[in-house]
Image (cartoon, rainbow, N blue to C red; front, side, top):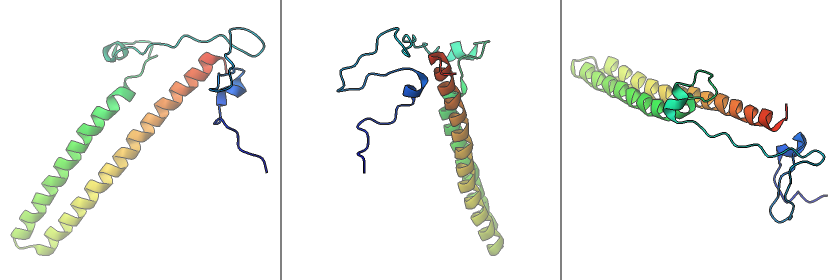
Length: 143
């Protein structure tokens, strides 16, 4: 049985680049077989710079998602609170079963709203991270 490698999996080793690993004393230089010159890291534009970027090279969505998530949670909480209050009003008017059913449906709907909203937000973030990773691979010359 072989021992596992000391360093974690490095996908860049399959794209022709060699990376310096701590403890090995190797520093890649520009040129040489299979070694690409280091790329200058692109500076991310500010929010308004990205907002008015007509070439769509900088994305705004990944910066706006946390704010949208907070606002969406506040909206779900407000809707759920309104439903709970409405269910107590219906129970007070004499329809105990109808009010209880409305309470249960409201609480389940609020929980499902949070769950499905989170899934949608995470899916958007994953799509944008995939795009950023593919751009980095393309800039390295991997594709």
